[in-house]
Length: 335
Image (tube, rainbow, N blue to C red; front, side, top):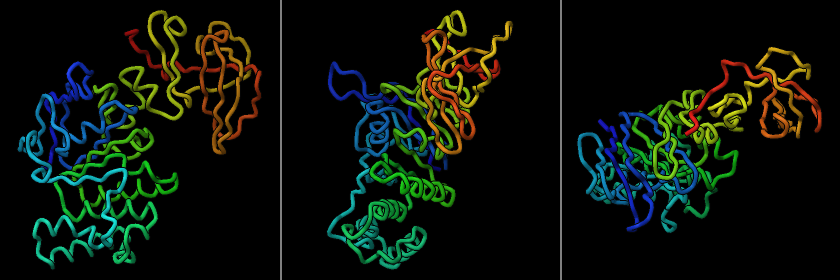
């Protein structure tokens, strides 16, 4: 079994500094794909490095399966890590990069050859086994880094922003590659990213972090539909949830609504209909299959974005009625 359990884990780098990670408690299930997401400096990479044994917790315990690995060196944790910068040996061929960790473990030659050939075939690397890393594209290098991790057959895979250095098209391709890999292997994976689109499309569950603390742990759509607080609401979603300060839609609470839940109609006043709000178009972003309409609302005291299917022929200054369905509103405590 390869569950990963965090029990009150914290990390402080220097006395007097704020914790990089604070009271982190989480049970990652065997075979689960967990994504840690949050802005730079939120503690997600530090958390991953503590699982890998590259950082030592200041407090708390980390378990892989039934084994307390808190004080164990990386080589004794049965993990494999894929980094943002590939970390390939430049003087070794693709084959030798993939085989290196197995040679250090004194695996039999036939077993090394079998694993390398099998993984190379699965990731489309067979034509490149004799090449050096400098003769590969960025996407191919990241595929080799992935292959090098897979051949080790670890209990847990750790990914530290592995797609950040790739262009947009290659990121989508590699994202699909990793998803298929997880489906095929069923191995526990912990994936760190600052990109909430990656988090939403890849994770079984997502851990949203801020300033070293967990804000919410939930499956992607639960996180999207029912964010636990205004930080999660504003971080998850592109564009993010529209938020309105207390006194705007509720006398005491922050109100939120997703852009796609807003519909735009002719700007007719309809007394008694609390769901309709007269707004003025600020500017529009036509995106092909949809249009983002930016609105000034409540006498210019608030702004909102409506996501409209197809092309929306609005211009700056147009008046519209923005309809907020009551069942689409989410309310947050003022604190």
